[in-house]
Length: 425
Ligand SMILES: *Cc1c(COP(=O)(O)O)cnc(C)c1O
Image (cartoon, rainbow, N blue to C red):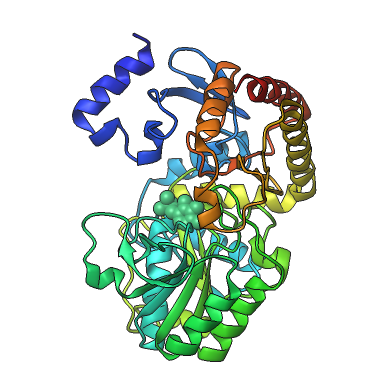
């Protein structure tokens, strides 16, 4: 038995499924997860000594690769002063100034500890500010494990929500409407009937938790327009895309301004941080100035804030987005070539440093189409890639990430390995 297998056996006795976040359990690709001993730059080293080129990058946060010296140093310096104060600290002001400067729609921001807290709080704020209760989301978009957001549609049309998880009262899910992403007509129809009861719409502007879906022309602008028309709060969940596709996230790339933005992942430089922000007028509804309660014992934690400051400052100084996009595009071309040679129907949606695999004849534009892709091929690819020292996300419904620590040598090696892996499927 390998060291990973032994650890997993012990973990499974004490921790449900052996993991503290379900997708880590490798259930959708089969086999047991490896445990990581250490990580540096573009690579993970498992407890059994295998070195892997990492395209999961801690599921998004590690845009600078693993354990970058500057973030390590920032944490070490903060650590000297104490780990938690329970009072305001100077790092909170510094990171708020940075984030408001970087993200176009932000006038004010509140920090919390995870992406889930950020979306949960943004929704509460939308409801509190509008005094309405309905929330609209899109099938296949993941916004963390918030009760009213763990709901997806059946097919195509608007459905009254059915929860995806046990433990969510039907009444909660009933306050959520689910639409198919990219379906402008369904969006207009929903607003025409219930628009004056809709507190807000939450969307991953580029859905990246069911593979990677890109918007059709005009879709996000239409969303902006109906929210403005009906006085509903438009929430961009940029927990994944924020600071990754541009310093200001998708909203900067496409020039559409949401009312609220949820952030997470990269913003914490590898420590647990979430944030949400937007128009001052909306944010002033939060306690202690307004009636919408939101709080956190460890929110604004000095270690987490200092890691986040270092991560964001590095992005501003490096401006790595063009280079990351070139690498993403190189990956896309190589993967498509490999699939073509093998005669496999593969789509590789890519934007910036994000790319995904859809084994499908046609481009994938919504969740129904995602569910129709060949996930068996993905599981086979995952295993073949692992055997060649390349770590892809252990699920067909995730996005791959490239970090600034990946160089063209890493990409050469990965492309060679993935080309062989595709041939071996
Ligand atoms: C990861 C993610 C979340 C949840 O963030 P956690 O920090 O895991 O709670 C929310 N929204 C999106 C778009 C995400 O990718």
